[in-house]
Length: 36
Length: 163
Image (tube, each protein chain N blue to C red):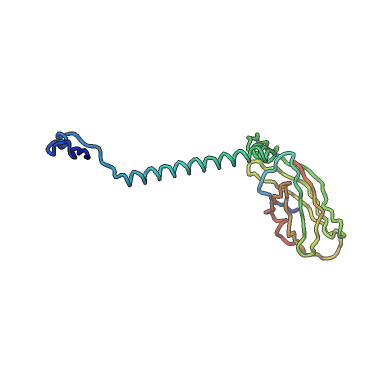
């Protein structure tokens, strides 16, 4: 289990995009959209 | 025969007497410096009128020529009641997909906690090596981006640790 902390509070209803990329293999994950 | 006129009708001894003591005479301003003062005042008035006209023209152009952008600017300045997100933990099961690879590291979000006390979001994720091969890697980027282009980088162990 890994934990990631974002030091901000999102605005409700706004669409945020999670962008993830690995450093060694260079894998870029597909963007994941999140709303709160 | 030409007629002669008296050249001096006043007696030389009828000069203007000095003012009595205690009465101040107004200062005599030389006509040259008084003229300069009037010119400077006129230039100053012209500058004020010219700058005022320019300001009025700019305000008028901003209000009428660019009506759309002016309205948008005014709309942004309206006070907007701030809505806050509800605190709590959201259970999710979202697996990050990778359309261009065979997903050697399966990353699944399991929960998102909204911590309104410390003003932060806490993402929890599990990593699973589904390829079977030994892998050493790390997340060079694990960030959230909003529609305005703001990027929020994570500060947890997912964004820095090797696995």
